[in-house]
Length: 243
Image 1 (cartoon, helix red, strand yellow):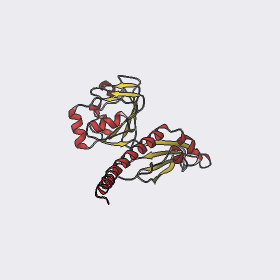
Image 2 (cartoon, one colour; image 1 turned 60 degrees about the horizontal axis):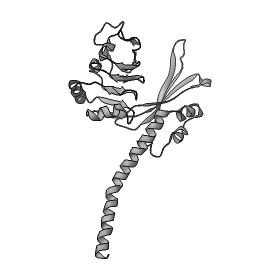
Image 3 (tube, helix red, strand yellow; image 1 turned 45 degrees about the horizontal axis):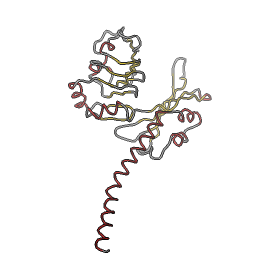
């Protein structure tokens, strides 16, 4: 974990997977990237994904310049602005940087307006314990640019010696259109009771399913329209010719 010299409320949580999470409140500024106990000026190069978590409302001038090397920027739904100079955006477009977040939020608009790819962010679904196995499971709905979405299970169990951990990971693939006519209640039914209650209360999942189905309905209606117009024109022509 890193701590900002400029603002004691801003912290960075580093993950071995290359993910760096920034937590705090309000808008971030360039000075927030100066850290305590970090001697390297290029510390940000170690991470390929920057996740801006809930509570942060904006990324001010110069902040993103510290993260020139990221491949993915994840913006929570509380983020409402991000200052990105043309030079940075050009670099990101060349490197095909991916923007992630929820539908109908600033993240999606930011990607669209700046010619960057967008992908819905993964949705944490549940965490629960299986006491008989001394196991703790974390369940996530994951999305991919290329490939099917899946439900990922990260399972933690005690190791063979004190201080060590076992467990493992596995994933169940979903159809790409799994969301069609799916509600939170229907989605929760495929899980055990350990997870079901948490999923029923998951507002991020509820928003995703509602918006996805709304967009699917609009796409379907758009495809039907030319066909229906053709049938209407054919009917009018037949009436003219008496057929």
